[in-house]
Image 1 (cartoon, rainbow, N blue to C red):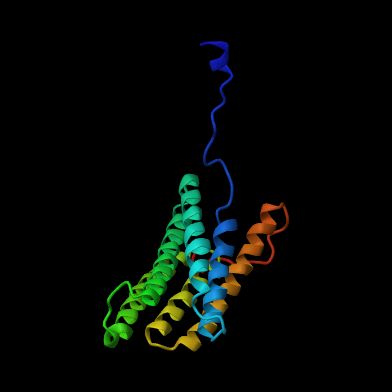
Image 2 (cartoon, rainbow, N blue to C red; image 1 turned 120 degrees about the vertical axis):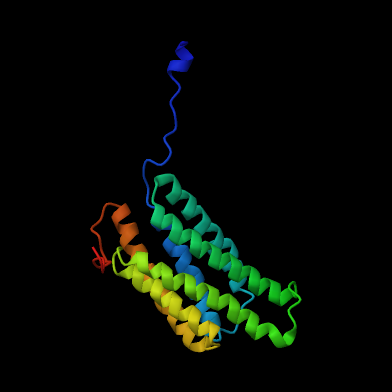
Length: 196
């Protein structure tokens, strides 16, 4: 080998980091925006779409890729599924506003119901593997499942309160992850796994 080749240093991918440090706050941001929109914030849903698509949907994809590189399968699965939810919700809201889908007006509630029921089933089943994680995570996913079920039932105001509740839990968990990443104590607590 030449002297130049001996000095080439490889880049080690997947040697560290915590994908939750990015995934949790962007989840929280979209949740706050959606919750406020559901509770009747005067700005309406137009402001929510860019947050859902270009902050949360996009950066949860980044979080998913980061977790895949680190071999964190459950983190990758959770954030990949949530990225799909946020991206599809953003495209749904945008498409409904712009009339992309040619949904007859009389069938719009049934179409939205189908969307939300599909995700209710997903998040209900996602709660089960999360039971092996600290309790804050299965509680968050369960609240998401309940909120999406309420949206399927057309109870948007009550849904908004549940959305704000899981936004709070996401930011709570993010505080723990970010403080730990800075070398601090693991506070606030995330709780013990419900199943160990």
